[in-house]
Amino acid sequence: MIPLYKPHMPELPELDSILHSGQLAYGKYTREFEQRLENFIGCSQGHILATNSFNMAIAVTTSLLEIKAGDEIIASPMACLASTQPFVAHEINVKWADVDPTTGTLCPESVKKKISKNTKAIIHNHFCGYPGYIDEINEIGRHYGIPVIDDGIEAFGSIYKGKMVGNCGADITIFSFNAVRIPNTIDGGAVVIRDKGMIKKAEMVRDCGIDRSVFRDELGEIRPECDITLTGHSATMSNVNAYIGIQQMNCMENILKRQRSQAGIWIKELECENDIQVINRNEITPNYWVFGTLVRDKRKTIINFRNKGWYASGVHINNNVYSIFGKQDELPGVNEFYAHYVALPCGWWVDKGENIG
Image (cartoon, rainbow, N blue to C red):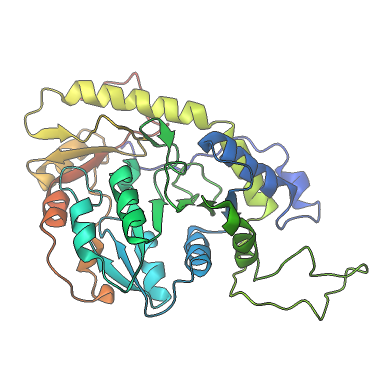
């Protein structure tokens, strides 16, 4: 059966020498990987910080924005649990907003209604690689003075109005480089920071609150007078993971090209299917991490595609079903979207010339 996900791994000719170099932690390969990410997304130099996990990308972000236990964020329950559970782990209250049932992404009007004096951030998940209503959500954030965090856990390489996610105006964007994401560094993540004035603080938060420029003396000893004033995390990406990321970036254009070509075949094959509607909006170009559809009968459609050798799936369940987030209002858009959403394999491993009907 053709899988919905498959980790991509390129050739790694320098890996063995790196493993035996004695330089495994954050270093030159991490800095090069960050620069490659910046060049690809179109960010200014120094605005992307690689982390050792997506969880740490979230932790760095909440610490950087000084979102603390008891504070409140607005998020979509139509997201990977990896995008939402970390906030609960930091005792941050997650307030669910509804989604557009035709896209699975945040409904701007619902976000407005959920804002309160306790709201410290809006987490804008781009569901399964399909960018949401970015301009509208960013405008809400600006109007109320609330930071917007683009959750690009599955959206690296996705495009909104000609710009890459990560360079679309959000205050911060977070990415996951987990094994089934693209690019895959086995584990890892990144934080994209729009405000140049926050970068130094972000670097320190990512590195246990340390200012490396004054941390050690001329003998390499830690300066006792160098105070630690920021809550930080041990979140830097290693040279090993970053080297894998660099090699992945060498393949990125081809991966996205293959996935978008495959999506074109799906669109053509499904255009006459009355019970299957392709998810699309003119202003977006998804990365097609998966190919999203809305169907009349979810269970029947999944079984039918699996019988044909395609591992169809609903991917994520709406997170508001989990008691850990507390009981909240019913969300009709979420219920409708979840009841009809089915994803089809569309990754680089799919033979784009194969009959996929």
